Structures are given as C-alpha cells and as structure tokens.
Image 1 (cartoon, rainbow, N blue to C red):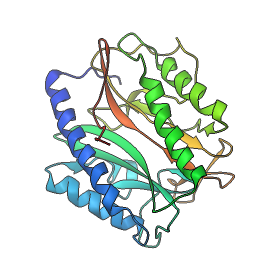
Image 2 (image 1 turned 90 degrees about the vertical axis):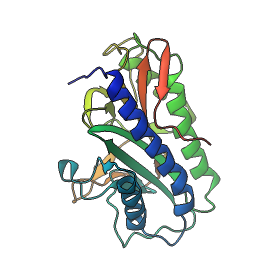
Image 3 (image 1 turned 90 degrees about the horizontal axis):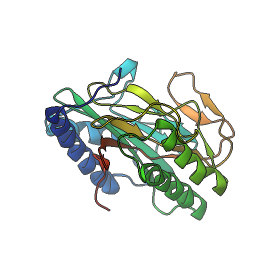
Image 4 (image 1 turned 30 degrees about the vertical axis):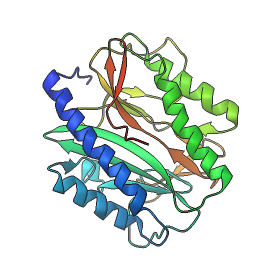
Length: 251
C-alpha cells in the first residue's frame, strides 16, 4: 500500500533519519580490518537502542540481525556473524533500518576497508553517484520509471551491470511499502510520484554480470560470477518542487 505521510509522520522520519546519519558517520571509524561483521551489527544495535529507537530489520520477515553486512561479492542481505572478518582491501555494504515511534527510514553505504583497489573505489563511486543522478529533477509528478532510467543510463555505459531482482521501495509506516522502485526502466512510465510520499532509492551495481545467486540461508545475495558489488541507498521525501534526502550525512 502507498501512504502519503502526514506532517507528524514526516517529523518522526526526520528524527529517524538523523539517527541514521549519525550511524553512518560513526561507522567510518568502526569499520577497519580485523573486525567481524557481527561487531558492526552489535555497534549499530547499541547505537539505535541507546537513542530511543528500534532496529527495523531485526526479526523482520525472519531476518536475524540489526543490519545487513554485504562483503565484496555479496550484493545485499548479508547476515552478520563472528566468523566473517574484514580484511584490508575489502569493501562492505552496511544496510540499516531505524524505527522511531513506528516510523522507519532505510539507507545503505558501501565502505572501504583500509586501502582498496582503484577498481573497487570506482565501483563505490559510480554506485553512489547513480543515486544522485536518479534524484536530479525528481519531484511530485515524476514517474518511477524516471528513477530507473536515470540509474541505468548512468551505470551501464560505464561497463557495470544493475541487479534486476532487487529494488527500492516506498517506506514509512512499514519498512517496505509500495511502489517498487527498480534501478532500470523507461522514463515517463510507471507510478506517478505524489507529494509527501517517502521512498528508498537504492542502486545495486555489479562489476561483472547482473546475475545473482541466493545462499542456502535464504538471505545472502551474491553475484553469480563472483565479481564485486556495491550498494548505496537513501530514504527521500517527495516534495512539490524536489526531494528531501532524509538520511544523508555530511561528507
């Protein structure tokens, strides 16, 4: 179901988004070679709880952790554990959901672990910039297809591929609301965005082919060819003349 957010709900989302921003800034110091993905999960859980919020993802549809930690060839939905130790040169995507008084925000960043290759850094940079390409000119009256077309037209000419099976989504009263927001498509098609809708735009970009595989745990989504992937996501509010990025931290 698509929900149009009330002024009160928007304020709650802004507070949730502020906690999200602080988490992403904090993770810049937390993420380093030698820590486990479970260490990341514990840190984010403690931060969310200590700031009067709840983790949106914990137990959502059976997911067993606070965050998704996706290392190297894992695209999305990696489950944190004590055995996965980050190594110098890795990249790790950390996908976070914050629930404040029943209202959610959702965002993701891909972090470098120490010094990474130029190819890995380029992947992270292109994935991030594709989000900003997607919101150029976006406003009430734009179409969902405008988002996917902008991401696709930026990413694919650079030699990367886009995951088709996973997509962005509406958000607010639930972690996932309608409409779905694919990272490919045709401008001027699909659902017309309305003022005070909240959506997540989340490009998932592969170095190699777009094909995926799902692990036996039912969650972990990897590139089928073993090449690396990056993920970048923000919660945005659709406004009459543009968008408000609710989860974007300062650089």
